[in-house]
Length: 142
Image (spheres, helix red, strand yellow):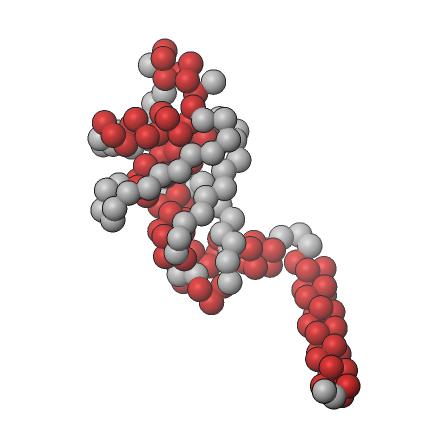
């Protein structure tokens, strides 16, 4: 579908300042059926390119999973997507996330949801079970 939009010249870029190689990467990625990898040295516009790819895919009702080699790289992507009011769920330990994106974390989304109390009760039960298991293991000896 994206390929047809590209051929027809109907793909409108969210970021008009993308250079030719970034536009090519966006088009290539959108034309893939399963997977696309964006790589390159620091400062070459990878995050800008990925933001465009995600926005284009979401506009066409596709779901997107992004990953990166560091928490800060994922956090940068989340911040950039959030500026476009994209619906985002950031997975990762809350202590390792930037403060500015905490509200996109799984914990924060669950806490705001309709079933927040159920989730809290389940977590409490899990914590209690861990305490019981740890106690029994400590009593069983070597």
